[in-house]
Amino acid sequence: MDLELVTIGTELLLGFTIDSNAAEIARALASVGARVVRRTTVGDDPAAITDAVRDGLARTGFVVTTGGLGPTRDDVSKRAVAALFGAPLVVDPVYLDQLRQRFQRLGRGPMPESNRTQAEIPRGAIVLPNQWGTAPGLWLQGEPGVAVLLPGVPREVRGLLEHEVGPRVQELVARLGGAPTVTLSRTLRTTGITESALADRIGPLEDRFAPVTLAYLPTVEGVDLRLTAWGLKRADAERVLGDAAEMLKPVLGEHCYGEDGCDLAAVVLARLERRGARLAVAESCTGGLLGGRITAVPGASRAFVGGVVAYTNDVKVSELGVPQALLEQHGAVSEPVVRAMAEEVTRRFGATAGLAVTGIAGPTGGTPEKPVGTVWLAAFLEGRCETALRRFPGDRQHIRQRSAQAALDLLRRMLQ
Image (spheres, rainbow, N blue to C red):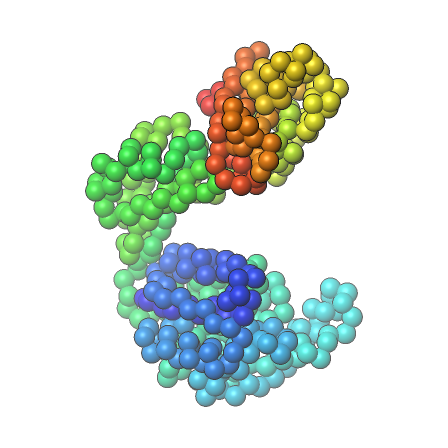
């Protein structure tokens, strides 16, 4: 079943807000047999909303909208779409009472009068309860087709998709006699290899993936390879995706560190924990970003003890014990210094593994010998130290992010 998506909000058109809802909706509905074939973004303009929804219904008979269901004057989606279905807005006393109780339960005092508009429901519409916010989702079905109205808050959209919209769409697809097909994806995550190098490795195999399609998705931390099976029965989709993934993994080798939402820091921590190892970090150019990546993983304390941000040479000497002579002879961004940082932070924290990063993130500070983007990494593990020199492109933040990722990857490979 095909459908169209209309995302509503002047802030989306102006670029002030990133439209994350569209991707969330497309993925969720594809998994239950519905495919988004067109996406339109309009501002908080009733005429533009009416035109976009009417045209989408004319083409596919099914439209999902996000945004414009709040209590303020610029939230006009509900009224515009209701008019297309000839459905006047009427106050739902049950939902109005639920709204008032919600405000009391959250300790916000009496409900503002403006929120009363959120209890106005198009006559005949199905209310999709929103336990994550105040604006309910709405399901309108009539002569023009089906319109599903969702709020614009991503957390609320995710909840409504999972608990209300997804099951209803799946039921509708079955009722319309559509084949019980789905579109499923599986992502292999890689790091330390460029998109073009991956394409050279994988290119000769791509024809063997059919009916699975392959997309290269570069990020600042690596390249994700997304495998997608379109319009198959679930068991068949899972089988062909599995076959394609198993075909790819030997080609990717050590560059592949996980699948789907896997985080490299979590992989490293899991391997450290299995060995009973404890990690400490010493950072210069990353300024705590590496430690932040690690501690963002739940349960990190089982394998991570702490770290030092040694940004200046004085701190490298006083807090890490890096010899002044090394700094004077080789400079802070050098192999001998990063090696000393990794070894000393491990010793001083009583750890068994250490990671260190020192580099030039820019935009100034580079030289012909050590241009901006020059980064030295060191990983120390149970008495053995490995170092690596990297030259990263990009702005200051990209260089810092790539440095943290590369440091984690260096240790991951030692933990194989």
